[in-house]
Length: 445
Image 1 (cartoon, one colour):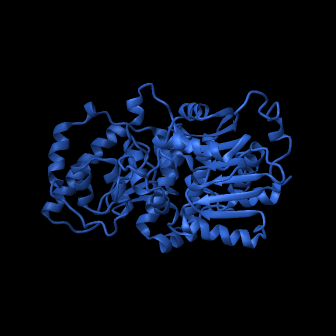
Image 2 (tube, rainbow, N blue to C red):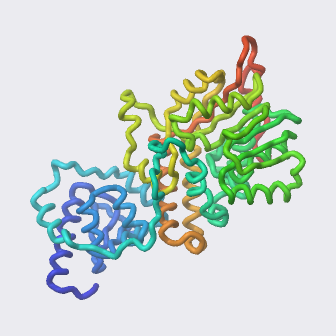
Image 3 (cartoon, helix red, strand yellow):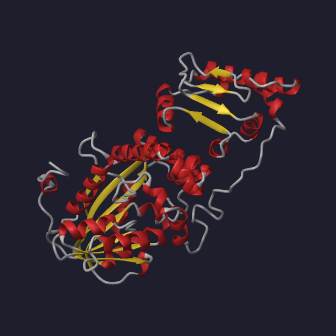
């Protein structure tokens, strides 16, 4: 315990009254540690291994003056709120199980006002680093979206950083667990295999991967399916990594990659994959996106469009409104991204000359993928901090934990949609069933 003066004792007493009152209403499973070291259980069954520590009265002052999700995140990211738990994702999961909710009508307004006055002028040091995207993070107000700048803000962070939590193939998209006990490494290989099977790849075909990342799919498809594969990315660091990988695997005669916007591409491809790139397009740009893919794909060629979505709403205005948690992701993680609902994706494909054959949801697969990523990054916290700094490390841990829970509870969705370019009447040149996707086992026997 630390020594306190009179005004500090009043602030500590006010903080205790506030948290004790909220504990009665919420019955949450964790403790709050105040800046003098004292502990307050936030519920009857508060667990000793779940502790939220406040570094000083300025934290409460900031949150009471601006009770917003972004303020809470900033206090955590800059280390003024510390969370002690086996892992951050476990903290969120255990809190979520108790579903603590505080109704406004149950709060004692006089106690809240009287206690809050103690923190009206309580401040803390300014943020040491500025983390957010410093222009319009939505991309909606610009006449021309700067896709390159959006992509580089996120993906050019550091290859070494991403290596800490991704699999050896550097797959930064949803893995496919045909058994929930499988490792991330095996599930990511399963994903690559499933994509190739859904595209019905054949030796000698030309494959285009739009937003190819670190080159995992184009290298896998060329090696295991004998295709000629081409990828495009807007990330310099991904491009450099993929070039080295292509040479290391001896695939230069069958695999190529360009640092280029997909809109600038020409030529014709038998099969096209867009894996985890769809979220970056922007709904207003869908017509341009699908027209371009249509122009690059041969007749009866197959497209696999793999993208994160969210639940549809009856009210379109409500659907288009950006929720606070989504705005945080736009500002601090993925500027320019926008999530549609799968119904509009299917409608857009059909409206632009595609025939949709298969729609498969992978929501629970992505919840587990993100959970693995979060756990692996936490396990490498010291190295992660050495690459990107403590603030960005905590931002990413919070992001991965939150997104994992978003997929787990269904507020986020992800779908793979298989469609073909179909100019004329007649067969689509696809098998009569999905049997060919599963007739061979995945991974090592």
